Amino acid sequence: MARKPRLEFGGAIYHVISRGNYRKDVFAGRSAEAFEKALFEACQKCHWRLHAYVIMSNHYHLALETPEPNLVDGMKWLQGTFANRFNAFHDECGHVFQSRYKSLLIEEGRSLLGLVNYIHLNPVRAGLATLAELQTYPWSSFPKYFAKKVKPPLIRGEFLSVLEFPDSVSGMKQYARHLERCEETDPAKHDEIVRRYCQGWAVAGNAYRKELRARFRDDIADPSGREFRELKEARWEIFLKEKLREEEKSPAAAAQESKAASWKVRVATALRSQTTATNAWIAQHLVMGHPSRVRNLIRDNEKL
Image 1: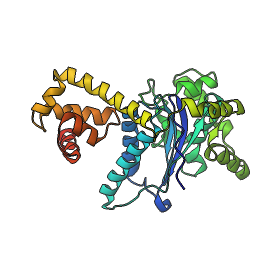
Image 2: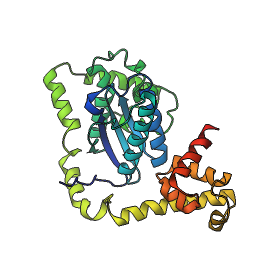
Image 3: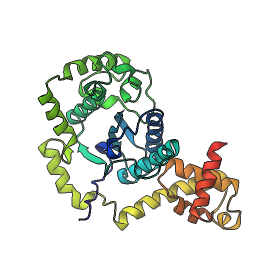
Image 4: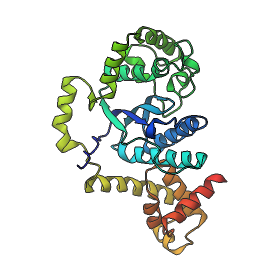
């Protein structure tokens, strides 16, 4: 049976969940740091906004907003890039993640706040930290939100505003006290929370669900469709034109100059780091030969 396409549209908020293959601890040792780095890189490439995240021993949770309809592209890059790095660390090969990642649509407001709470309390419920220790759990957005200025792609203002707390350190201190009230020790309540935030297709009120169903056919991009592919490539072309202007080069120069010209490598590196453009597309539009050449040139350039 064919898989249903992901529901994608600009401004969508998702709860994204993925587990390690065979439930192995894929985030042990330096792997958690490597995944966090890849996550921030994916956010930069795809212009994602990250309301919350937590990396556990064998799975992760993201509260992720996509200003552009690019969840599928971004997740493909994120999980593929981390899998390659993980396999290189451990001298392994094969799948790192179990099956398909989940992505539930989240309504802004109270539903988003509830999800952020659920994500931030995961280490407590798993016995990895107490509430008092939560601010020192390294692989989570929670401790990072106690900085005076939060660095993109992290964004704390929206869930704090639901509680009418200021977007500041003092607001986070109020939020920490709010989490103490949210923590539930009853196992039955835990199961209810998991069902609410990890199952189904949306965490939202009936009105928002009805709105999504009504909009889906006409307004939400099908990631497998030609129109969606053309939209993606149009964005890549705009970015490429901007970089060519910065390099004072024309499209004709790409055909005339060396496949490994330094300016081509700079433009290719920018395309890969700031968009979801593929090596094959870059190779074709910058006339750089085989896509593997593009990959190798970018890798060597990033080492400099």
